[in-house]
Image 1 (cartoon, rainbow, N blue to C red):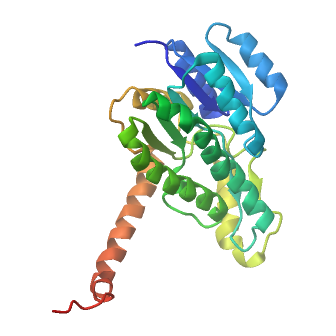
Image 2 (cartoon, rainbow, N blue to C red; image 1 turned 120 degrees about the horizontal axis):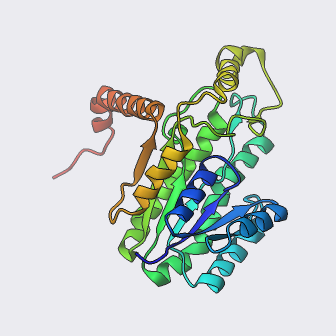
Image 3 (tube, rainbow, N blue to C red; image 1 turned 180 degrees about the vertical axis):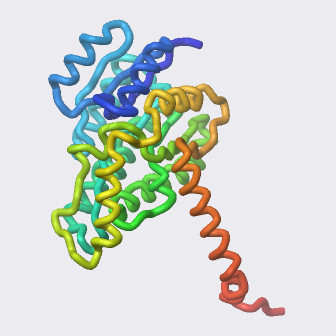
Length: 280
């Protein structure tokens, strides 16, 4: 296989860093994105002949097209786009302000979709390529105290599922990766929390915040193994739409499927009657 060109957002740490290192070890070229210009220079210098970097802030819409244009100018194509960068946020729905909700959506939904759209003209001209969206098991099942984050990932999943059907006839593949808790900096110092805390939500949202703090650094997921799973996903001619990662992800997604099944079955008679009766 010829050397493939990857764009991976957020490669400074965690899963993004592990994936970038693995892809370069396998002989493909990585274009990593960073928020700070000094990180761009450091990555490019450290990976001469294997990769390069571009500056990208997912809350800066003016940068998306520039990144896509730079990739096309320098490489002429893109083979794999991995929308990995994102951020967490804890807080009950009522505790979460409009500004906080919009911020998490900018990073986890609007940014990845805008970057995808910036690259889609190149993907369409090629009639090939793979778009990999990093969602979460929290993009399938919601948890009390995680509603803003859940909503942003639910939105990413919905848009990506529709996109997959839209671009499949053009030879473009789309996959949604749904990790459970992985041992990264996700729940660390950069983990967002609602400024407002209401006593009534301490047993639910408050308990969730405490669990996140307790498990930080002890999560079950291994970023290196997740990177290997994504690498293998990229090699498949017909990859699955969704790829859960981790035992907790499997358990939570399975419980959501069962909950949906139970609700559908319980509502089947009512649902089937909520239609116009056929005439003649």
